Image (tube, rainbow over all chains, first blue to last red):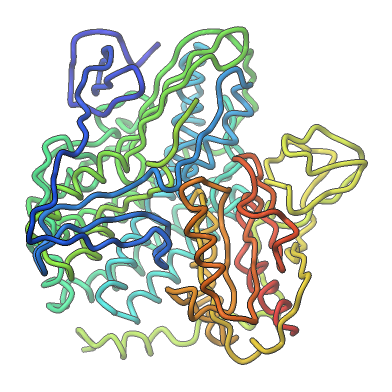
Length: 388
Length: 208
């Protein structure tokens, strides 16, 4: 293993797999860190249940505990659409097809994280060009994901024009991705020690999306109606939070800086943070990160052209990898024995983000819910997956 | 200055909606279109049997390359039952049984300005009671079974049951289909289906 070692906890806590606690630099045996909710409904409260089939983008089961207006407690059920993926004893190449489909909207992050863990186990050090190609893919995915989150926040405010303009840009990004990899969600684009994503002149196209977005961003930033719905809504004080939610609370939590899996150090990348801690802060961080991602792509596009065909041979071993997917840290671990997957671990960002959301929702009112939920960019699809 | 005036900002962008279906789409991601080829290459979901490609099983994983390759035809759907009474307005209830999010995003995309489903009289509804069709995405999951049964019961007739993508139709590589395949009136292939495929299938389902 190149990037992780079994040692005392070092660095921030990332999350837990079935048998390990993962930190930024090390892993330990699992502690009894995770606890069940002990909240009991008070006499004057009732439970407002939302979902599971609610017309939201995904199915999710949300229970709001309230005496009438203020939300005292929130439960988010992810088991309602639990998917069990049987990966044990399967060929790692076949397992990749399932991993890509854990969260299809973030298919590149998932595939690249899993492949990086496999390569780590197989002692493959990917060519720098290939690593840059992977960064370009993840940053394309981040631009589209951030557009989606901001679109959904604007939708909660009933802002038809920016919603449609953002949807237009999101579709434009999907076409850019589809044109270059043959698939709009990166399925089948990445494989062990290879990628078929064509990055030629991609920087100009993503730059044009970022430029168009800036115009919409200025409009939203000038709208008091919109800003008022976000400010002081869902204040995030979770010190373990990850991704844009953490950075919007002033924390420098970003796998692009503290994970060695992908060489972001070559991109002069700077972390975007904000001290607002609320949905407005998360909106600002996501908006600014679109520009940052666009700059990273421009910086790398020429450096990952003319990818070679890199060979590899299957080898037994253990590997771990962590990448910054659009909603935060995404971790994968694998153990290969006899050319088959013996075990695997997975920590999706939405598990932590759901916890941060639940805490931040306390004391808010009903009408804050939609804005706050969308601002975290949570995908229940990835939180409701069990690897076997 | 058009500061703060979204209406004017919208006008300034002009019309961006495409002329589909009168004009063929300029750009479709290849690996969401029909596969053509020869032989019986290895397929993880048995989407190629006796040299025949079965569209609703295919997850477009590229394992059949180079024997099979996409041909650009995005009309990969099957309509078993048409309902012409939905010709003027067609309300869809999206139902996520256990999807990865890609089908959800593509269905959402048909509302984006490039496609603009409302020009066809197609709308989303948040309740099955107001729905003409239920669009099921993702594999069967235990937790969503009751909700799916309730939604199907709550829909008024006439109604259509639509499978969106390989997972809902046949289970793809992730599990088993959300319903038995014969229960679907419309099956839309893809992993996920392309927005053009979705729109074409919806138009065909109401007899256009």
